[in-house]
Length: 231
Image 1 (cartoon, rainbow, N blue to C red):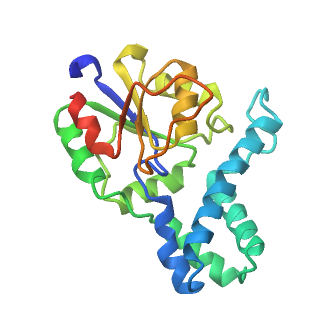
Image 2: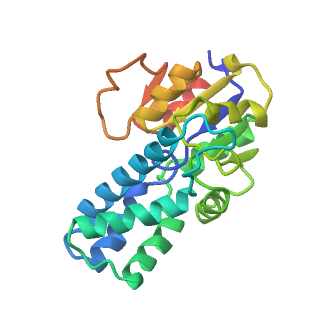
């Protein structure tokens, strides 16, 4: 079956890059609080993207409240530090943001992406991240040159799971939906892609049940190695 897909579109944060890897740096700054900070930071980051999109969903040029994913990440960090009663000084925040710029890729990411690239598949990233942020993450993870295009939402000024974000796939690569497989570790992102009408692959890294709101992903695996079974 496998030959059904020739275009693979990957989410970035949580799928290719481990958003919780910042807990190690956080633990050095705030001993014993790194895990709690990393979790709240991520939750607040995603929440802010939704608030911005929903506050102005029909804006002709995107949300009036738009700020880049990098700015959202900074604001989410500031909130999380204050909510946990941790030092929110500029120095501490700068150290953690510098770490976020070079998040660790999951161990299987480079070999899997390399194999797909060598096999001649079209590979894309579709992320809430802004372009500068994504480019630095890709370079840091030694993934440069392996993707046909890295797509952020800067021009759109909206975030997933707004349908217009998934439209960006076909603006970058005019191909039939049947040939595209969308891959994400975020259940809400997979759900959004399902509702949009994409074939989806859920990288269920945390061993969770899928969202109860809608259709299940077409494929599921505990890590990206499962994608290789479809090629």
